[in-house]
Image (cartoon, rainbow, N blue to C red):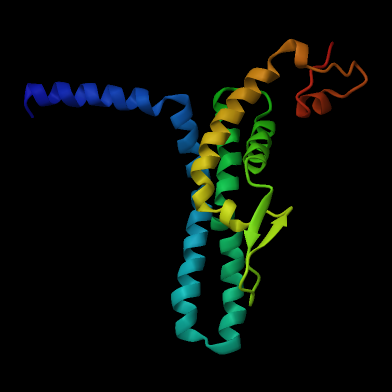
Length: 192
């Protein structure tokens, strides 16, 4: 390797290390790594449902067996936007050494849901016209298509939550009668 290539590789390695240690990118990496087993499970469920089961079963038996693959897909891929928002919120709060990362995860998920439409148009089975329905969270708004929104909202919501949580005037004091664990989980200060 020439001296010029060696310097380039050294500088590139330093840049990659700095980039990899950037807190938001590190949080994204940690969250997606945490979600990886769910994606693998979803991939196996889709593979079994659409290939292996169709070779072995048919008719009502195939429908009954594919039910479980569909349930696994619904619990993994079809809510992945919501799950990644929570995972990113948790990882970012942990990387920021925030005292209650679970609260940040819940805030991230709640903010993603708050940004979804209140009313959606659905077409019932056998119907030809769409009907407006409120009070539902369709998989179309939660699945992998919502992952980008989940990433952006989780990063923003977690950063804002951490900043607001450290504002003393917004903290609630429940006094000495409240156990420390309760105050900590509610992100409420306890005066000693």
